[in-house]
Amino acid sequence: MIFRSKAPLRIGLAGGGTDVSPYCDIYGGAILNATLSLYANATIEPLDEKKIVLEAIDRNEVQEFDWSDHLPIDGKLDLLKGVYNRILQDYGFKEQGFRLSTYVDAPAGSGLGTSSTLVVAILGAFAEMGKLPMGEYDMAHYAFEIERKDLNLAGGRQDQYAATFGGVNFMEFYGEDKVIVNPLRVKQQYLFELENNLLLYYTSTSRESAEIIKKQSRNVTENKEKSIEAMHHLKDQARMMKEALLKGRLHEIGEILDYGFQQKRQMAEGISNPLMEEIYETARKAGATGGKISGAGGGGFMIFYCPVNTKYKVIESLKNFGGRHRNYQFTEHGLKTWTI
Image (cartoon, rainbow, N blue to C red; front, side):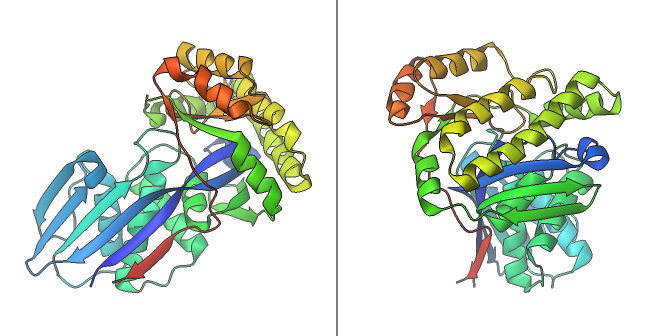
């Protein structure tokens, strides 16, 4: 038998960064995000021999081990190893070899939550194989613990929940472990219009999000007023975005995105850079009413709100920057698993 899973990547529309400790532990965070038709995929194939083969197909990386109940965390395919180690520790499996293969539809460091979504997908494949009894909240929290605590990778909390639940969600974060996911019942025509007007643009650069997030966390720990105030404003932005989507005030979305872009720059050094500023201003001049850098910042994807038919002019205006736009649809579903 073959055990498969896929989990959707996401774009953060508002509130980005308020799901990161210690800000959300002290003040509470709020995020609005939506999942896309871009996925992290995982497949587990049992093998006759007692070997463990790990393969990241999109990165052209393969590692092979004799069967063991703990694989070394050494900077190579650590997300795959981290999930395996935790599953073995908590649930155990019979001593049988397998091949775990993964593929992600966007590059690592692109700002669409690729790492956390991949952890959710791998967990899903193991849960499918072991018939593990996990609900959405259990799965998302488990993925968070593996990535943030077991592997000690800096980051927020939204990605694991977006990948598991799917759809358009307003998420609230309180303290270390309390997360509330509020699915939004956005009218179909509003979603279609948002999908039509929202341009997803890959800058053809990637970044190490952990370093930016560490700076952001340090600013809160050191009580840097400018940074904390910016996060308060971003939390307000998430509520503004929720209201605009639910009430169909789509003409406000560009301005709300721009408001967040201005605030996010204040959170930590490295979130924006001269290239991204130039791309942003070029898109604005071509007709976009606002936009943002996806994820922690520093590179990866940007999104722009382009009302009426300005999207095509914006795409044309960005050609000289060497990036490319990606087509997508919003998805209603989160993690899916199945057996062949």
